[in-house]
Length: 194
Image (cartoon, rainbow, N blue to C red; front, side, top):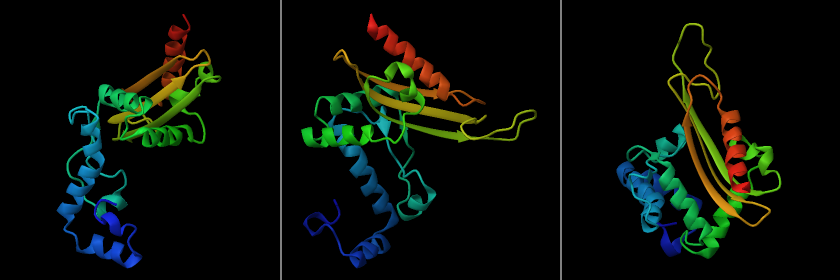
């Protein structure tokens, strides 16, 4: 959209030509700007959250990485706060992002806690795991022994009207930590019942 401006949407031919003819470095810099400039405008510092590449190797071949991706809970919480305040660009954009967070097909990980059954939970969760051979351990899905990141963000609207935000990042090696996330959700919500 940024590249084509008022000529958006492009014809299929123009789209193909854009990705074919634009230097790879320029594509990477454009992608970095599109994703990260709005974060900086919301006061989310680069050291708190930076997306440097697409998540799939197929897309990375089309638009190469422009550095690494990283985040910390503070940056993620600030992002959630701006959505809740209606300041993610504007009120409409904020509500649209919140709606997309609510559309997750099933409540998993943090959001699967039975304590949250009567609450509206707007969440997203993701994981990244890597394995290396290790005696007496069979590495598997969500059970990395080199890296086993599981991250969740949530806006929770309780039935009593209270709203709270959660950003959880974990790296528990050799085990699927989904139940740990669920347990933390239960305990955090219990604190807010007092």
